[in-house]
Length: 278
Image (cartoon, rainbow, N blue to C red; front, side, top):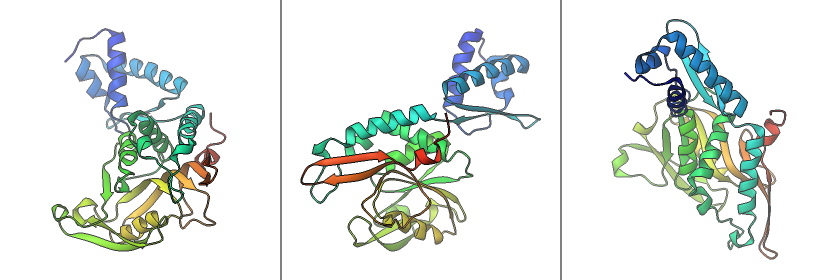
């Protein structure tokens, strides 16, 4: 039990909530933690709720009743979302990022925790209304983004492997056609990694035609799981039709000319979906 001044209590309560998104926290947890009356805790939460909403940090929901409490839902306002996009664009449009074959070098971006965490919070905003059990991605470059998203949704991460590993136990493997290489490849998922009928959010770093994501969807059918959403950091506009129709993208690669070294990145459909939000 801690006895803190109200100002200190507000700071610690705020941190407590930020580190536990999408978790229902009973008022008794705070009352016992600080040795304060529930009425005082309610007043503190009202102050935190007001700041969260004014600053666009997220929503603080109060659930009444004996089993009630508070739940923090992270949110990224439109202005902050555009700032994230512009940061991504300014980096991706550097001419030296264009690799032979028209590929775009992205590994260093995916290795920046602050930027990836912001993108994860953006995806958590987009899929906050979904009922989800896990976040799924395929190794390897999508892993940081999946973990960032899962952190803000308070969900576990499931990683689809390129090959079966002894340490994973029995597994399900399928063949799929890669949208980038147009080659038949294999992906595998351990039986213990995902329970049957789980509700899954798929996150990936790049989508060309969508072959890899379609492969994950096919793999999930073997687990009788449902795909509740798909989020990609960057989609390619060079294909006439994607295999995946229902997805959210943060940015869209519209040009990558090996001769002129010109790279063009525009807003993804995430901003179409949220065009009226503030």
